[in-house]
Image (cartoon, rainbow over all chains, first blue to last red; front, side, top):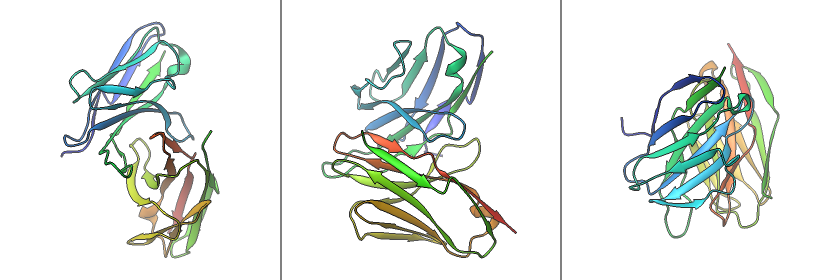
Length: 116
Length: 109
């Protein structure tokens, strides 16, 4: 399977702990996106990369959230000092940027985070 | 800010009963409108991309259309396996994607 892969699928942690999620995009895609999705809502954009450059991060939810894509391949999303409100599904997507249009994003199955 | 509104929030159909889902949007410089299907516990699955008013795309029992202010996803003779949440998203010149809250479709045998 050559789709977007996310790890872990589920994460349960205590409030105040740090968590890190990994995303492996489709190999030929140059853009990678992170979203948060809560029950009954659509995905909420957090940040995105083009290759290794983080082009938008103003919509990260707070300074406790950070993302990296060090070599332009896989990406990690870290949440520090987790809070109950961080419980959600975290989705990763990738796409191919072309000069004249935005190609569709392809999503992984997400990491479900539960804060105790 | 760009906005996407989907209606209805939920829709129950009898098997074979055709209907349409609506996605209305306000965006400066539309660079694409996308339809996705999402099953519980899964990530959204890409269905269609529409780039300009008047464009139409079809796949099996689904047909997506686009005007300057809204898009419709028409479902013809749905089957129970079409039950899912259908999400609409738009992207603008800023290259960000904005999703609606989705329509939860249930098709009853």
